[in-house]
Amino acid sequence: MTARNPIPLTEISLLILAGGKGSRMGGLDKGLMDIAGKPAIEHLIERFSTHPGPLMISANRNLERYAGYGYPVLKDAVDTFPGPLAGILAGLRAAPGCYLLTMPVDAPLVQHDYPARMAAAFADCGCRACVASLNQRIEPVFSLLDTSLTPSLQDYLERGQRPVNGWLAEVGAKPVDFSDVPQQFINLNVEQDQEKLRACLASSTP
Image 1: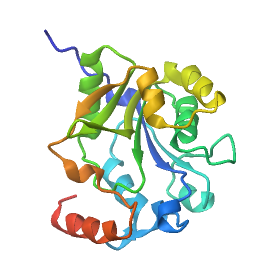
Image 2: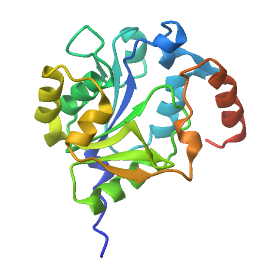
Image 3: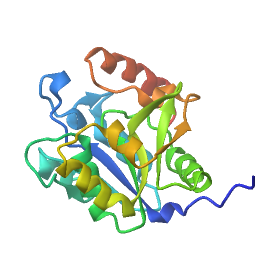
Image 4: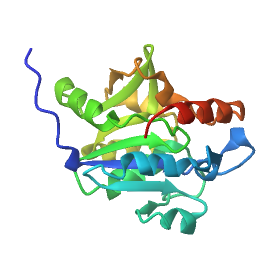
């Protein structure tokens, strides 16, 4: 089968998900936690500052500080912290192009070619959603979504549903294997991960 042309990166809006409660980290705002000398979000902004499409930040706290980075800050439409999908819905609504690519703020080792790899896979799968996977297990907040899915996600949330996996299954999201770069998925869910991330950042090139 002949591969289709990847969708243009200019049409892909990047959304950094920084709107969680940080429950596993004692309520800390993980996007502002120091990792290797700077807040977690700065690692991602530096990695993707040259992305040709828009970059947006989903946040519900410290809005002025996030806005200081010079990118649009999107607040959830509801104040009950229903999880990442509320931030993703805000991103789908705000994206000026046809596609939204998500990543969590507490995973500063996201690879530079993440958008390009997802775009190529998206074009080949012929579907409206792709999701990164690691060792055959999907990583649901690493997703590329067609903005036409906005009504579907709104309906899912209005039905009281919250699991990201559940919605991705409903819309038939296709997995994209990233098992060659497992470090992309190291995050700050437990404090011990900070040391692991510092070591990886110290040994990696920007």
